[in-house]
Length: 318
Image 1 (spheres, helix red, strand yellow):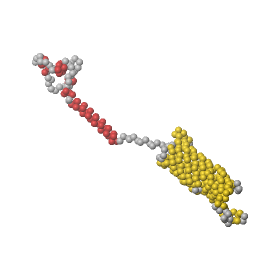
Image 2 (cartoon, helix red, strand yellow):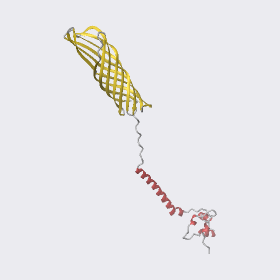
Image 3 (cartoon, one colour):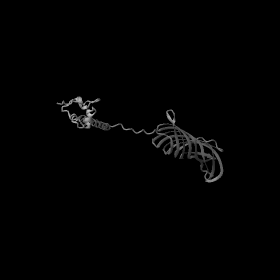
């Protein structure tokens, strides 16, 4: 009687079939040995087993072990996906928008202003003594246009250096009047004099320090002011009483200080003080008797100065 093949019958020269590592509860088939004894050709799988090579084991690949591995892989994938979704639900910090660029005073602007101040003037005539200073005041209203450049590399006293050029013009209601009584050959006469500033124009350089949206600046430049002058004598001398008048544009020097603040990206507001000192200038006068040109003319030397405070707004268009 033939003995059933043992585990050793499945051992090859170099390896052992993996099914031999586990105890078998069933009967091991002896079909390959019997077929060989009867001369029946062996199958490819039997030949491999007899030669001691590796045998493909579909039962093992599709068995419980492989199913466990597949189940573990699917579970791990599901856990990874769920973890990613959970992290998204918890909220990844969003990228914050970049802060706005700091305000720069570089650019050109146009604006308007109003204000008021004091006027001082005096004159000396060829036929009279030097008059005492006379004071007056009034309003102004006008506009300005200019350009600034803020140097990003230069600072002074903690502020960025700003330089600029500005042209400024305004209408003026500044004036003064003077009245007195004169005793001329025993006649009482009234004497009135008026000096009126009609308009001004100036071009000035600006130098400032910027602290963000705030700008402290000074300015210096040339100014021109147009003035009219009149003197009138009236009283019992009528109709022989006379008047005299003249006009001139006086050049001068402008000095100023100011503060400007950018309350919107393209809008600024300013508060400014100006001193304008006009140089002494000869003014030609004509005389009138009873409203008729008398024909005689003469000149008087005038100088004047103004101190002005004004507020304004500028629109930065570039």
